[in-house]
Length: 229
Image 1 (cartoon, rainbow, N blue to C red):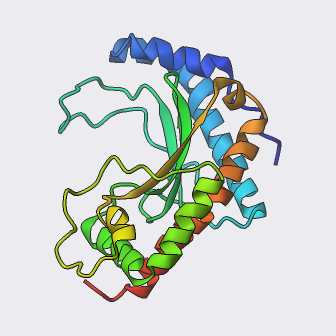
Image 2 (tube, helix red, strand yellow):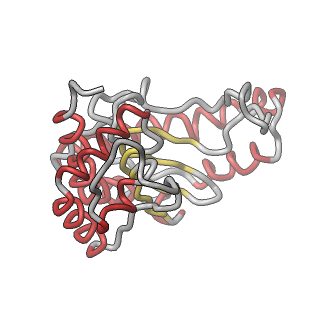
């Protein structure tokens, strides 16, 4: 596969202009720019990153047809009614679609591109199993967090419950905060200079490799408690 050269600065230019032109007439007139500078490069990036992840033995990948989010927004249940996303993004999972737990995320955004990994806003039955995984092996969880911090990463602790969730008893104090988390997510900001260079795939693949212990901890918990409610 041809090496992905990075996104063109024109991708950011298009998304910036779209931000100020949230109407279907403008988008129709500029659809060719969207396809050339955003959508098709996102597909090529997805293929190149998937290949790089495979070489690094990170078992997540993306499919250009199933892994990418549409530019059109579903605004039915949102207070913000603008019809188009002002960024482009996709998920890389063990199945190649967007519905498998444990993800690598990439976002192309003029306000700040980034990648992220973990379990973001998991469904209740999945979150229960993730919490149980921590409770069953608190020492392994503590060691995991310490290892991540040594590499410069920290879990987002901004979305937590006020109390220990119901049904979780005798929680060690060292993991009370982790048990209260509503999801596990770690983010890495990507400077525009990197996003527009051939270093992008290498950068995101290396981040994914660093995140593999976090993803694997969750996959192990989900497999262990696969039959529980």
